[in-house]
Length: 174
Image 1 (cartoon, one colour):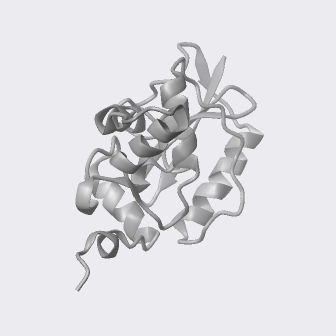
Image 2 (cartoon, helix red, strand yellow):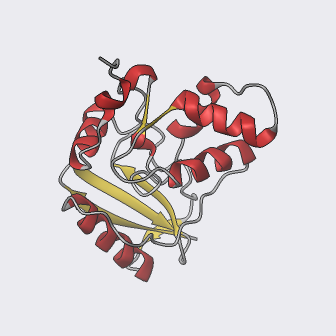
């Protein structure tokens, strides 16, 4: 049995899901792949993990770095996606990384010459726990804002909230 909870953010409604112990989902309402990991049988129910996630979201949307992470259970049958999502969890607040950098990290970990940035993009896009697993911090080549399941407008606002310095990183040296 899964459980759901609703949170109203400055960017719109958010639906959270839990297995009763940990978060299994966090989606902007109506986003691409909405509720992709939510089991068929679920009901709305207050849970301690939702209280903790609400506190995390309140801190985050106030423009402060949360100093904790709610318990997460990333549901996937794909070790590839799990590896990508683990890399996303390591991206610091206010920092960005490009898809190709994640692909290069994964190739190095596997001891292979290269990995597809497009495949990485697919895994990033299917991240079931938005914001906390910060897929919005992944940008395209030269800092372009591409590929956010919640919408590019939300991605832009999230990076603005974090005061992420995307363009300076990709600007040519003078």
